[in-house]
Length: 463
Ligand code: PMP
Image 1 (cartoon, protein in one colour):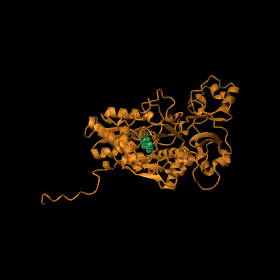
Image 2 (cartoon, helix red, strand yellow):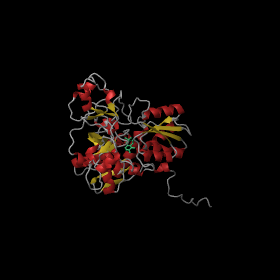
Image 3 (cartoon, protein in one colour):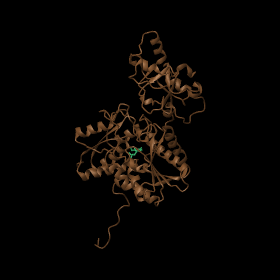
Image 4 (cartoon, protein in one colour):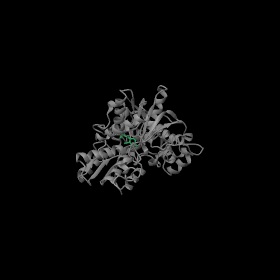
């Protein structure tokens, strides 16, 4: 070919999947809230916002020499950061081990394995100092095997990725007209990085709102469990010192909005049906916060909300009616009576009895419920608000009172000898027939409303 003939252009294509990370569209919620635009992070190649942080953290570790060629990447993650790292690892020739809490959806662990990652599942509901805590296990695996710990919670490359990409994309896409930025807070990388950029570039005009599950400590909750995955900050009652991620820069966030599991999940389900957007529950939390904001802000407000991942990772949870009904969430099911109809109005939920209580302490309050759940009582918890995830046993206080009167139990005794296994759980929204079938020959069950213990029922009450 003559030297002056230009080479034919190559295909109009990305050089690798890594170049397809970022540059996600902004989509208006045309039907639900036309002033709200979602940043469609589920369209990243790994299916979530975390592809951005994963790529940035690996490139940074390559530059600093912390990650040698062919090395081992280790991370503690609720799944999506692991998926992002798996993509980068495949493309750049690394091995990957991810440690996930047991609340992680089975879809996410299956995806991780499909990319060839090693998955270690560890209990989620333990204190931060516990050797079994996700971050402790990840640290140990990295140390034992000479791996590099990505450490999204404390790695400055995580918020920096959003300052460098997510924030500028939103500014460009809205032509600088954004007034409010909303993002769920997990490690805090998204809200801190993109939020800081948007504040700077707008001369402080953009308001930054963090969306947080109710009960999470970020929004001042008691730290008890919630069902939305990947955001918020859980605090085990035995935690000695509660350390927040360094990726979360609290000064950037003007306001943190707390959203209950029910509202998050129902908002996500509504987005699928009314906007054709199948999203995870943390997107439901963030959009719910944005909808509240839209309702109380000026008519020219332009709200951008990050929707971090797709509902495809949660078909077995938030999009499974059976799963939701067993936890007492109000979702559509065949017409007919529910457990609520047959048990009638419930008194205030029974307060939890701490496992370390004495018989006297357990009998001290005069709540009428005969059966009490045994589990932690947290400072700041509304009375009786115990998550099903934290119930460790059952105490029959009516029986215990009889034993004390008869002199067989003494007030100073520990309750330990009187605690029996936790009861099975029945959702308040289930059909009595489904509840009866699951209860079988068990005599009693906890009644669950929105994932929390609301009372107990005797088998016979189901008819
Ligand atoms: N939603 C989902 C589904 C996530 O995986 C994450 C990451 N943990 C978040 C929200 C929160 O993002 P960030 O860690 O940047 O705060």
